[in-house]
Length: 415
Image (spheres, rainbow, N blue to C red):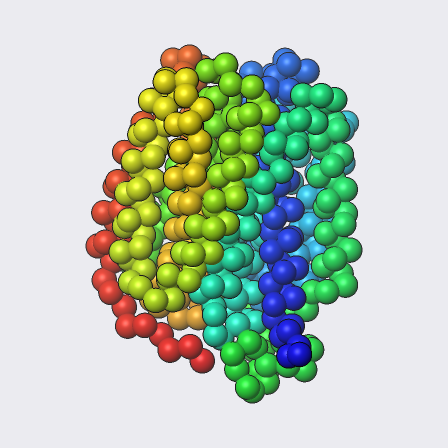
């Protein structure tokens, strides 16, 4: 029997670590109501802390990419997961709003950044030559799936026991992940004396000796000079606004406002995560075979339609329509990532693609932070999230126009 290439073990470890980081960061949506009730904090105040997290994890991405080049994948993964564990432990003793911002805004944002931004690109670039698009698709699927898959369990723990019980569960997962990374993770294939998957030759990595901050800023300056960067970053801003910022943060609360139980709403969100795993993995496979610009055009257009339909599905009070939305939207949740990475790699090259994509994720998370905060503001002003979701749907159609304006690049040969 042919032995599995170790690249697939690296992929599995990375997949699980992204899922755990996603669970930790996305659990914010489950805790909005409990934090309101226990501490008396307002919805906009809690939303601000979660918006800070979304903003910071996006803007930390390119710097995390540079730090990985300097200090290695394994060390950065261990450091980031340890920071998440410390943030979860600190949640048990927080009492003030500024502590919520420090823990769930700053610590969670920086700690989750590596896993939820550039890690998938760097692992795929280092460990895969063949099936690189598929590898990216699988790992980016983990990003959203992790953010959604355990939400019903966390919601049930909050509903039956307390929010502390839910925090305890994800704290244990973070500790287990530190152990798994310590045992199985490696920086490059050559450390195992093997070639990357799809290559026959050992590849000696080029070790970076530069200043990580200078490297990250230099990549941003280069990107800002390219039209393609602005179009991809602009579309990714809208991607963040219409996914983790709005749906990830406010979907459960939106459902609760229609009398839907919190566990049911969380189950719908988790259901989206299952279909995201299918949709994003398929998107990675498609991105190896079709024009990535047209893939993005259809992804954004279909997402816009689904967001416009959601308020009306909730108005009907029909669980069937809500289920249809969960399936349709779930397939599209992070399907945009593999073709966005593909276009970035085509335009800027493999070596620069991680940091360039990191800056695009920064724009993604600015959009997410805007939606997370203003979703709460809209709710306070109008007593409903309806206008926020309709505006997000309209912005998705604008994103579909951005990506189709990108000039087609020659496909890079895999090396």
